[in-house]
Length: 343
Image (tube, rainbow, N blue to C red; front, side, top):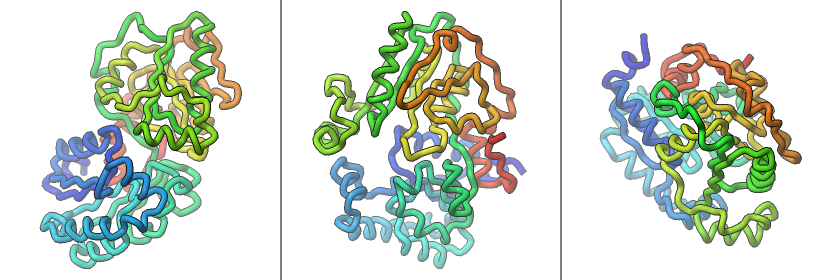
């Protein structure tokens, strides 16, 4: 049975943080496949202060979190849902999952984490309550007995859905949050590429000015970050896509304590652009080839000019489907044999 046939008329209770609008794309895709979806941000409040408190000392806002989830339990949709789908689950309380299973025993509980448990340890205590559990991190999947499933690209990034730029404006582009050691890696690499006589586009995003002030004062990796180079309003997916269309290659820097492949990786491959990445684990995946992907050293980030001048190799339709949002949802909701795209 296809994913569309399986989801026809099914009710999906969906929890995810507000994450660059990807939660909207997931909801819309589920609905396009026939599901009825009720979406909740897993956080009761998305202010910068609230996010900081949840990360540093969640107990200070636990009563508010509990009240938020108690109200969700009262919603008739919750008691009628065929699926609970949680992504990340940083604040989803144990009592909520327990009561949902009691009040709605036929509901299938699905969990996916697109972070490492080192960064987000809380969800580990609730893993036993879910029916199917997935992680984008190979190491976490192996350590905790989860299913490894890489991330996805949304449909707008498939090259077939847009006309390609014949003469790209940029040889290299970077769009990303200025976290951890990204600035230390990206800044010298951009200068290196410019010295090769190539053009670049760079967009550093920071979630707020107060967050930047705190990090620049107390976190070693941010001391060299220049305020004037930061942007405090993120680009939309369409704006990102427009820059990708105008670019020959994309730069992706994963967090130092993450080995899972980022969404940007799959957007790049779907758009048939070259990928420059710090993630050595990409060599273990079927879509890796040295024409399309170049792995840089975090401590000495350089790329030879020849990489930009070589032609890209194409990917077959089956592989592109598996990397798509629909392919990802099929593995999470209905497939028993999960292909995690590794060699």
